Image (cartoon, rainbow, N blue to C red; front, side, top):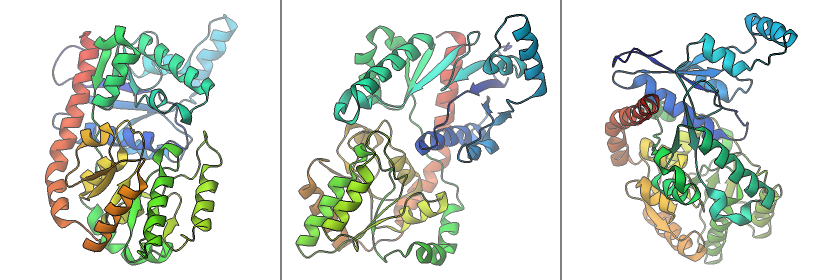
Length: 390
């Protein structure tokens, strides 16, 4: 139990189920945990279960690890089975570790819980989902909202959808804008690894960059059409893409994209790198002409937040959440109009040389600490609201 002092640590368990292809989710938790560890007067102590996934292990330095495979747990479970009582790992470890509240993942019956809904994409892009998945998501979201004390939403745009989806539970909703943390040493590391990265990926001297997963709603195809339009006009530009090359909802999507590139003779213009590590990601961001996010839908774009924190100009689809994120010097375009995007790409390609945006980097560095501090304290306030029943 908490004693009510303003300095007492609050143990928060994040009992999330990690999907190996949801890198945005892992980055979300990494940014949150990092913010909580570096804020002024930190109060939150994050706990997570040990993860088999090597991707999730990046969270270990910022959280307390609960080893699920302990002798004590299995001993209690053994005797519980003998006496006909079922024991859940999450319940056992939350009691053992004196957890005060659970957040973002699985809940336990005896603790208050804060859930997280990243977005309501299925309400807007019905064509991206099967009827079965739409029904499942609706059911899961309703169940989650009913069982949670509070619900975190990543944007005001998501809040607007939430109000329509669950009008009887508006009092549970809280908006938390996450911030992407960029370590101050990233800039030096990028400079030191320039030759290595350029050689490894055979990078062109000048390029646009798209760091999105290859999911259909990320809208790569429309961007590739814009590249084709420029090529037909005699304007050769380069686009470098990275990200996980599989969409479980559209298994043929990536192969169709590669066929489009080949059929339209764009192999010299578009380069797909697959997954890259963080330092390569930041190098590609920092040294491109512009970062592009042509996405049809976002809950709160990690690409945009990373570009804001790194200090890089963006070309963005004109969706509500991109305007809400409000990155400096961003240019917006209709995500269904490849001709409009082609004209923006032409102007940037002809007027910009690529490489670091030193003025934007200066602004980003100056804002980094305060932005992370604000992120951490807003989450802490939500936790305190939940514990107090407000």
